[in-house]
Amino acid sequence: MVWRIGLDNNEVKLKYLGINGFEFSVGGNILLIDPYVSRTRADEPCSHQQTVRRHIHQADTIFLTHSHWDHLADIPEIVEITGAAVYGSLTSCNSLKSCSVPEDRINQFISYIPYSCGPFVVTPIPSLHKLPCLYPGEYDDIPERLLMRHEFLEGGTWAFLVEVESTSFLILGSANYIASELDGKKTDYLIVSISGRTPEFMTDLHSIFSFQYCIPSHFDFFDTPLENAGIRVSVDEFTEEMRAIDPEIVILKPTPLSFIPIK
Image (tube, rainbow, N blue to C red; front, side):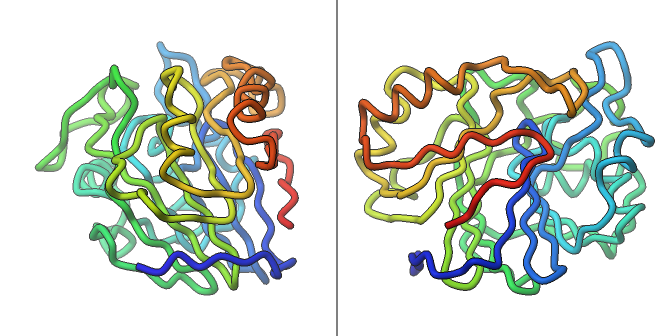
């Protein structure tokens, strides 16, 4: 696998959707990663139709790093709105079928296979969820019901290499990884979940994997309105941590519903 690197594309737009949700757009083509905007309370159903429709209006393709509620629960409504094609693990696919997503919109990805989605090429890379993992397990068959948080099982975790024009992004949707999958590789932008990371997580990752820009994610609350998401994990502390590791890396702090500058 060749991990292209270069920063001469000024047409890529990247918007943060909170938690680990991101919207990539180029020339009207939209790729969503882990879009979850409902942000309901733990005692409520995980998805809220009106909230999803307020924030999501267009998508062509969706990729899911794993199948927890804060990554997958809004997908049925988003597909209803947009008709987007969804790519995920076996657990993700069975979860979506349980929620009546049309089967012709559901695609089980294969690790290391690059998927061309308009201007984007997305390659799933085996990864790991942080430990401890809440709601572990898989759905080998279609579950009877998916409504509350505990019903959305993790189902395995993948990283995504997203390539668009000459720019590359690696997305880690949870604060863990498989070292052998990343060792010796590089990307332009690392998008990394910082919630639940171990003290040595970024030091160890930086020792085997090169990146020029770092975008932290998964630092906000799960159940606050997206317009006022709040800070659950300190991004300032993460920034200081990264400055100590490598002061040359540029940290780009995202704000929900705002665009992140892509150089």
